[in-house]
Image (spheres, rainbow, N blue to C red):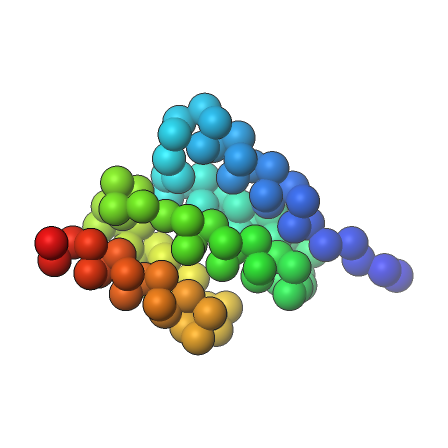
Length: 96
């Protein structure tokens, strides 16, 4: 049985959130991750979408709850190498 990646659906939901709300909420990010996990396999294409979403987050998106969620996702999916610079960049913006 071939399981198809859900990366397109994840990307579509992110696009709709930004179009509708102008930002990413923790709840929407959780829904996006749930879509990727639905088939039991969070594949490389789904990780790439998640990395893209995390790296696109702005300071306005980064509530305490969002920081906690992003940190949890980075560790859960082993994304530290891929997203660390983007998260550090957000830290640097806060120090200005």
